[in-house]
Length: 105
Ligand code: FES
Image 1 (cartoon, rainbow, N blue to C red):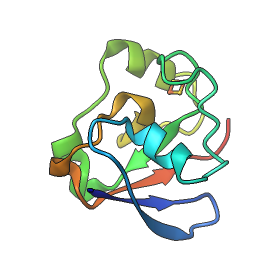
Image 2: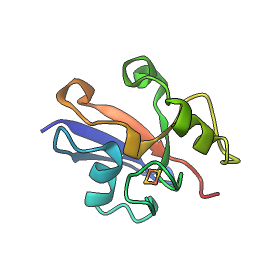
Image 3: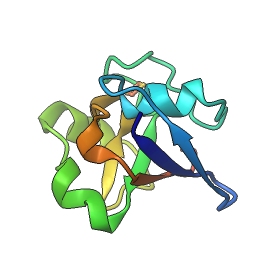
Image 4: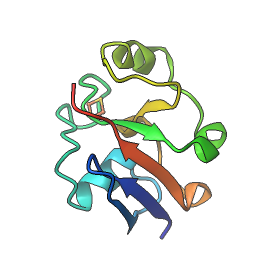
């Protein structure tokens, strides 16, 4: 299974395994990170699954679509590398992807 590297809000880094085909949000949540609320369950309507994609990965992961970008605009912590993790499909191609959980809004 591909590995996802997650940095929590304290700056602690942890590598976890995630099933390809799940969303990055699901991989984070299923590995016990309770900071990522993911309140809407992945339907791109809450923005509580906000992460920063490591700069080395941003080209491969790509940017948000219009709906996702509108939601990200509601965050005070939006950056150029912001994504909603429920909208990133985890895959073998993303093995080693590193994301940081964004501060709570
Ligand atoms: S879980 Fe709600 S927008 Fe991602």
